[in-house]
Image (cartoon, rainbow, N blue to C red; front, side, top):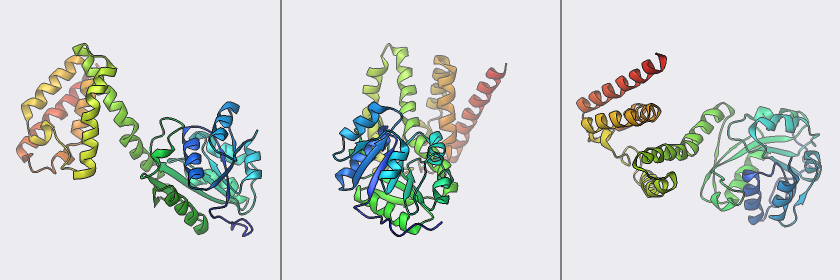
Length: 307
């Protein structure tokens, strides 16, 4: 449905938030710093809503999501993903009001009830991690996925992202799940991978904290190299050098340490072989030998689990 022209989307639009977690608080603080008017917030947790409001001058903690919708002309839904649709369905929306969810994975159809009420609906997902509620500074320089079938709202969302000194790109609903899975791989799974790498150090009597302190500069330098050199140039290690014997030693050592760690090491290398093969230093013969080693290790692991 087409929105009501009596509600204008610009820098003076009143903005409310339903959800006061790390993402919502960080985005709201960034908006306030960019001179947008964040006027209301609701949360299942009264203390979270109050903490959110205390971070933003002029923002009022209110008792319900309906209160937010009644006060603000643009409402950002920053609840957990599974709560987006039921929260939106439980609110009476106004025609022309902007309703924006900040989920990376959920489709815009989660906002169908708002759309049917004449609201403009869309999504804005900052492609960034928010480890604390005080992570607004991390938005600047990041990218952000925006989407809407309403051109007025889409233009406003792009303008908002630029005002936050981030880089907008549009995304279609059918791509949201794979886009978000990619983000998880580049963020949460990288952190988890560091945890697995640190776990190996326990064999040497080194604590996880000390192992992470030792590994962090290596990981940071790798990320910098990816940004500076691109792929596959930033990839280093025995596989891209064609060092078959070192790979063999790794497989035996990791399997001896822990079957699951050995499987993780094997699977990651095997799935990355297409990237490794883009490097000039890896000969076709060595690539075949390494893939054969890795494939056999994966088969051995599957057989051991099945026995």
